[in-house]
Amino acid sequence: MRFLKIVLLAVCCLLLSACSSFQLNLTDLMQSPKLNEDQAQIYEALTNAAGVSDVQLKYPKSGSYRSAFVMFDLDMDGEEEALVFYIMPSWGGNVRIMVLDHQEEAWVSVYDAVGEGTDVAEVDFQVLTDSGRDCILIGWEQGTSDNTNLSVYDYTGGQLRVLFESGYSQMLMEDIDQDGTKELLLGILKSSSKTGSIRLINDTQEGLQSVSRVMLGSTVTGFLDIEIGQIAENRTAVFVDAYTGGNQVTTEIMAYTSDGKLRSLNSHYGGLSQPLVREISARCEDIDGDGILEVPVPLVAYNEEEADEESNRKNIIQYLRLSSPEMLDALEGADIVETPQAAFSFQPVWTGFVNLDYGFRFQFPKEWIGQVDVSKEPNRNEWVFTLRSDAAEPPVLLYIRVYGQDEPRDVFDNVTYVQLEKQGVYEYWAAAIKSSDIPEQMQIGIDEVQNYFSTVRS
Image (cartoon, rainbow, N blue to C red; front, top):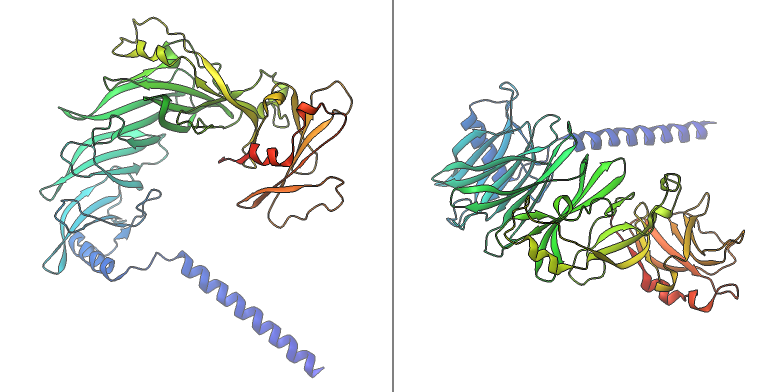
């Protein structure tokens, strides 16, 4: 009996010790990151310059620079300055930004200003002007606004000078015209009217300005992706994948012309919005590795019932590329309002099954296109590829099964599965079926299955 009491007491001590340890670790996790020696010196200089004791650091939420202390050689003198983001609760209001310089073995505040939001979304440095200096790009969040506020600064003479300001929902930076400075591409939303626009910002004689603004032709509730890429050989375009309501996604394409403008193919040249719509969130991409971006669309039209969450018809996708690149010449230097419609056409380069929820896709052999259906097995993550037939049980060509992490394997299968790939928490397995009920040209081996299978980002 005494021995039992001792054991119980020992167990209780262990449990209490574990709980105490957990609480201590949780408290540690909730504390702000510890400052290194240099940051501590900068923080001391910050509080001295601010003249208050309730300074709180603010950390950018995304991007490459995630510290409240952003170190960068702003004035190109070979030594880094410090950008510090902070708030003072007793003052309220927006985030403040302070620039500190290292002078005579000490950090000194040389500039302090109020930012354009209550949080810092992101920070970046890019050469956007012919000065050759890196501009400072800061995204500011303000309440529940549709868009983030962008401020572009130039640091000269110990001062931050605003070069450009705008709202944005999506932002890209790329040297589109290959002149050594990058252009800004901003996707802007207006939820009240469900409209969206794309603005191209470039360095002009009057400074950083919007040189092109294109309104999206469709109703827009959000951006899925914006990509700058090749629409044809040596021809650049902007591909905008946007939500139009629910899970429906549309693509709008804007060609970049030699005069540095964006010209919309969809809104003014051929009315291409409707064909470039799908029910899954597949993005434009270079699906075949030829350097040209393709647009995903459904293989065939389907009715409302087939577009529900249980249907797999919407997951059979074709990726299309522009097949009439010569028509892009009609956009060069054109007045969008007066230019006649150009007859842009597209051709498929890839057809297959895409499942973004489980991160995989399978390209159909050419003999399968239009001849194969895909269904999901109930109660397990397995997809069955069958030959289209009027039979009660159509012949099975292929099984693709997805196992989650630590999910038990089914040992009672009467077909042989081979592991195709492992990515993240998922393992992908497949079984290719050989049968006399299947025409020879429709049968594929497991080696072909492995070639046609690939993982995909959601």
